[in-house]
Length: 345
Image (cartoon, helix red, strand yellow):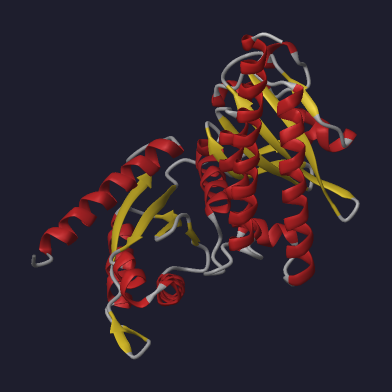
């Protein structure tokens, strides 16, 4: 054999070693998360982008006659919570057949939901069904902006990853009393709705408002101040306790008809439904500040709770979800900067 051949073999083994290490890293991170199905699914879709070198990934669960994006990464992120009829997507076809589906050119495949693919910039996709208790409950899919991107080697890797998701579903269902849908739509630490459920509610509010005149809703992005310091000084258990306390006070502040969710590490989101004017959001922020004024006692220490809040109203500030979130985010970061500028050096 010549040198070129040996170099080719060496390169192949090196590439496979990298993939194996990534899979082991993923398994380790899943073990650390434990019985938190929502976090496991999010970890998996993030690792998929590395393992398969694709532009995005998603886990869709079957909910009645629809497929719903319950975990997303990359180009699928903006579509978290998206709900599509099961009969109008390749994911639905994969559910019905129980078989892996490879589509390297979405424009040529009549089973694909063309508007959804166009909105996400998808040119190719690879899907594998997720089985739980002898039933196909969803799909794991990876996405590419480029046609002809996926190979059968990618399919083999995705099959390994799907087995990890199925195993997590099994253990979560066995040892946690709540059903899979609850676990997939709730944050296990705070028991609030998660990012996927938050985005789904936003989509529903926009759809409802699109069919009504003079009907508003509000969005609030709430970022805790000082959580990293608590984690560093008192440990992550104290930080988790503070997150739980923040969740409780948020729920006391808002109405049962509003949706409070944990959408990131120390970030929360609230959908304030059916508001008469944008002043309602300012008053809600004031109520929250009052609710947070009482210190929280942890490990014998009094910890002060505070948060930076940004809000936006539909349709006053924006008529599209991504723009609405951007407005609220920017206003939150302005409050965040002002908060730290007020702290003495």
